[in-house]
Amino acid sequence: MGTAEETAVISFEQKVALITGAGTGIGLATAKLMAAHGASVVLVDIDGGALARAAEAIGVDADRVLSIPADVSDAEACESALTLATARFGGIDFLVHCAGIYPEATIAKTTDAAWQRLMNINLNGTFYICRAAQSRLRDGGAVVLLASLAAHRGSYAHAAYAATKGAILSFSRSLALELAPRVRVNSVSPGIIETAMTRDLIGQKGDQLLASTPLGRYGTADDIAGTIAFLCSPLAAFVTGETLQVNGGLYIS
Image (cartoon, rainbow, N blue to C red; front, side, top):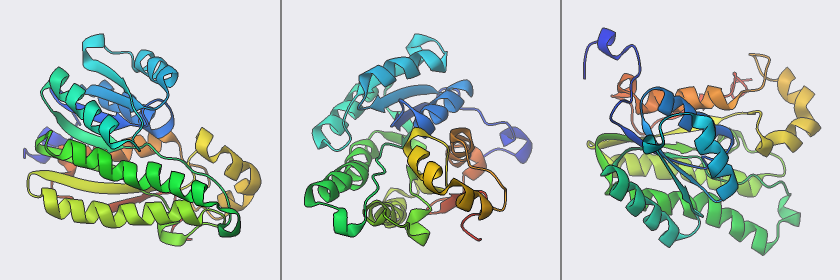
């Protein structure tokens, strides 16, 4: 690692980031930011149309962008995505896993099928993409997983979702032990971030949530992207197995 002066400006030149859920929201914001700092990006999303729009929105040379439509709840699709990324770029330096769903239902109204779908996408998908990526990550690389404030505090009518995110916290710490010292693994726990995923929640409880947030605003996808970029950068070279709370102080209120 270089001096503080050498690492003060984040650069991802000659690096490759594979980002799931890259078609919209936090995934797209992260892809834009990392590409702007020099990274080549592999965009993975189940929505092919969103992927095409994302690739256009990133605004870098086409040879630095690879779009792969894939369902992370499908183990073979995850393996195929990493095979394609490796064939194109020779490997990856960063895995940023943003894909997930956020359904609302109390336990009484959560069907077996709904529970299983959530586990398949949020939890199994995390396992599948990390398993596929671990042998393709180059030395000095980093993994960043998306957890949630709900994993720490719980969330009414989101118990199943919170369960998946709580599991991701434990998974990320264990993965950090397995991949050290070659690759660092951390997670981020966003609070209320203004994306399509939280539109209903903000509509129902927005005033209450803002009143409980010391910084007095909702987060943005760019807020989370900046934290992810930090965790991938040399500025976080001695950080692994950690979870960063990014919620404007909602966690402590």
